[in-house]
Length: 184
Image: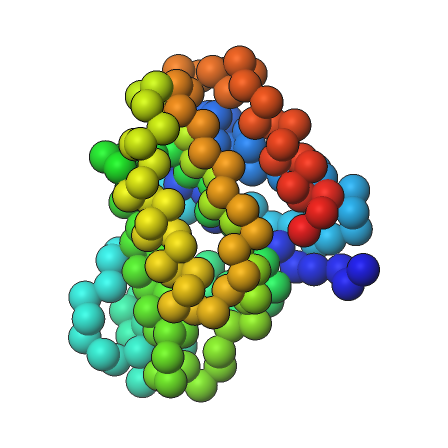
């Protein structure tokens, strides 16, 4: 099995929150399988959203503006697999993660002189409401991203009823995240 470079982008501003614990579990499984794993906490960085200026790559880097995307894009360029590990915010990605995703526009289509080598993706998401329908927005966006970027969707782990710290322990999410990491 080919060893992969896996990038996990977390979206929670809550340190050691439920989605971050899922990220750690996937990391553990992937490292057991011999993969290299990097976790990038987007909430610890100031990444401004894309402003559609179309200046991508005009200054020798993905975005003409200077912010903490400059710290993220080298990891994106090295990754074979991208994992989004996030809480659900109003049926979608939290702004801390969405801004990073939006700046990946620089790698879409023919605008990038250096296309990403990412070929696989995963979504791990938790939401406070008990109704699984709450995940339709984020899972739809995730699937559209995967399709547009031509990435193979390796799975969605979505857990409703997970809001308070450590609610994740009332589910099988950590076990399933580790297992997914082992088979990526």
